[in-house]
Amino acid sequence: MMHPDPIIERVMETWMPRFLGGGIAYYDIQTVLSRIRDWDDWGPEWMKMAEMHEELAEEAWKKGHRISAVQAFQTASAYYHTACFVYVRDLKIHNRGLKKSVECHDRVLEYMEPKVEKIKIPFEGTNILGLFSTPRGGGPFPVLIVLPGLDSTKETRHQRKGPYLRRGLAVLSLEGPGQGEVSQWLKIRPDYEVAASATIDYLETRPDVDPTRIGIFGMSMGGYYAPRSAAFEPRIKACVGNCGAYNYAECFIVDSRPIVSREAFLHYSGCKTEEEAFEFAQQISLEGVAERITCPLLILHGKLDPLVPWEQGKRIVDEASSVDKRFVLYEDGIHSTSNVGYRSNPLTADWLAEKLGGTLS
Image 1: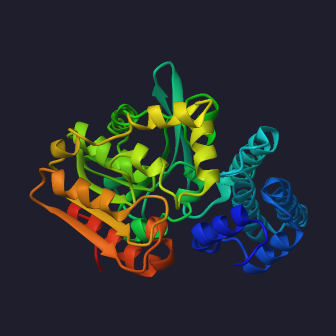
Image 2: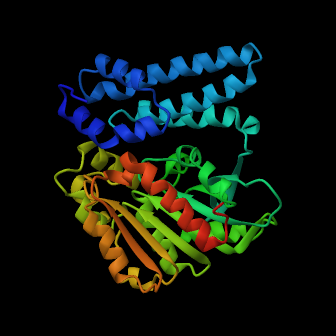
Image 3: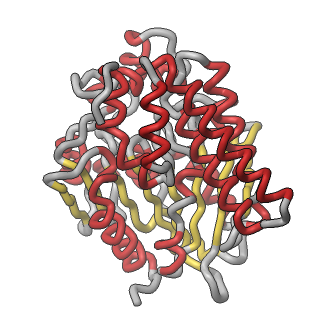
């Protein structure tokens, strides 16, 4: 989608499939873009659009139309997320967008079908958070831990739980350090495996979960966190990474990376300058770590990914010690393979169901 501001044009090139796949209406995208002069307008204008959808939700709620209201509040949550996810130049707007996204989602949590449970997981004197759902039938179920990336959240990731539930897997969409709601009290840390281990400790206390069949899946930065966690956590029995970095510092400086993504990394990491962020990003690396991965491993990548070069994903697979490992490259795929999800998503779900003892039919 063409736009006079090159930043906005780059954002749309990079994330348009993500917006559409996340429930953002094409007409609303056109409307907002027509009102935006430059990137500074992004957050405020998307907040206005989100507020309109929240008003529709409130109207449905007051009329007693609960089914419509539940869907509308979830839609409003997605729109508030669009306002804030890489928009950090005005932190007042960013923080309000994040707060409202969570608020709208939580407002109707108890009415969602299938059931969604918001959980707190003890972590180093505070909590990390998750959304948890189980498939139909009796447990205990194999469980998939789903990790957001740099700028996605447990709400946006849990929205896509359906294919895993239908394959007999329980789903826990996690927010660890530097992610979503948790980013308000914990910043990014390279050793994400500590959050994964705390999550598995929690899962072992649930009677509806089979702790011997735990998988992990992450996209974007989650595609680094998932292999990293699998390298250090032997309780993980299958791992999928989608467009994750082997070395984040190398990705931080690629010319095709949108400047707003660099700005978001500074915010979520707590760094003050790009130089400080680059130094910190060098710690986000699987060098000397990938070789510790021994569980079944699937890495997906898009050859046209502007944020993480596909060679990064290939290197994870090349260095992993697993005897059951696979690298899938989509020649026309972009970041998170979001434009070819009709190919990458079924592959991911089927592979995980096969490795964790779910169902394929």
